[in-house]
Length: 269
Image (tube, rainbow, N blue to C red; front, top):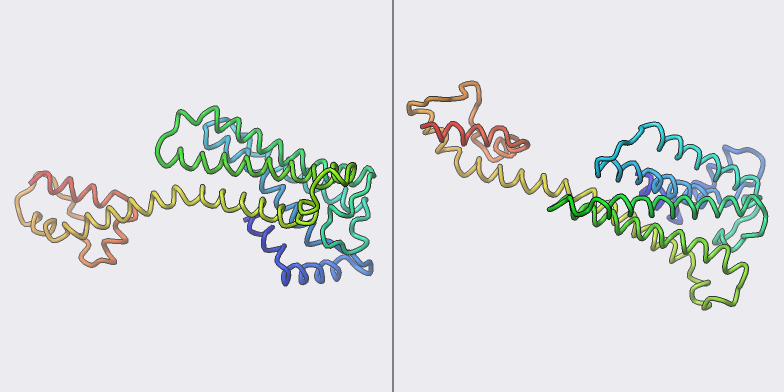
């Protein structure tokens, strides 16, 4: 949700509305670049939460309070650094272009890059260290998360290059890279979002495929199941109604329980 929010905040129409609402809420000062800082804050905090998620997936012990403290601390550090840096005083088409060598801006950009790179590297270490133990769809999900962690590290490197290195050595990189820095950042963060959503969809697709199989089993054999109840059985689930329509079969296929009970009844004829 944080990743998707970050992407929506960067859309032109929504960006203008957020800037207008922020200006009204904050007061008589003219505050600028609010949508950008909210976008980068949401992105950073979302990436921070990837570490406990990955740790939980690989079976590591996760203290529930730690990620919340880290996320909250990240918000405080980034927003405080943004306010004290003066980046809110005038509109910037691309905020890294306004970078100056002062403490607040160094903390702002440095913390973002370090937090994202640290999270990506830790997540990669957790996954690669445990990947041989997983097979099937879980392995696919882990690979997708590892790819998103690699993209996050690339995004952190891009921040360092685009903010610090280009400021120190403006002629070091091709003009095309400097000119398209914003598009590259958007592409990398969008790619992270897509990769994580794809990983999230893996177990959902597996469950959907299993439900389709159970549905097909119930629908193909529900009449046979009904006929089997007219015979003498050793075991019958008398309270269990046999689904008769496709919709009833689909609802019954939500879990494997009814399909397994059908097979059990029919196996005891």
